[in-house]
Length: 68
Image 1 (cartoon, rainbow, N blue to C red):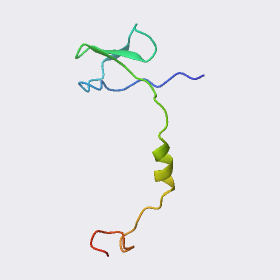
Image 2: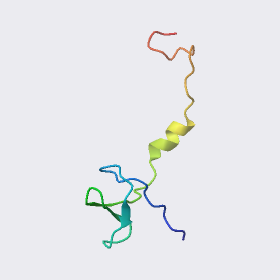
Image 3: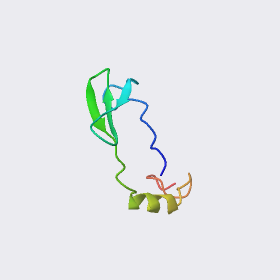
Image 4: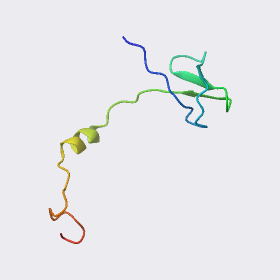
């Protein structure tokens, strides 16, 4: 299994001074705002598949609010 990508910015203050935390896998510490956070992947959304398959309405197809 490959190594996960590291975050580039703190989600709280936006600074880049991040270090892996001793709290475990996916845990990070921000030296600027002194916060610790954990990143994890929750899963794929089923609605994302439906949105990708649906055609995008074009201008003039009758899909607008004014009926054009």
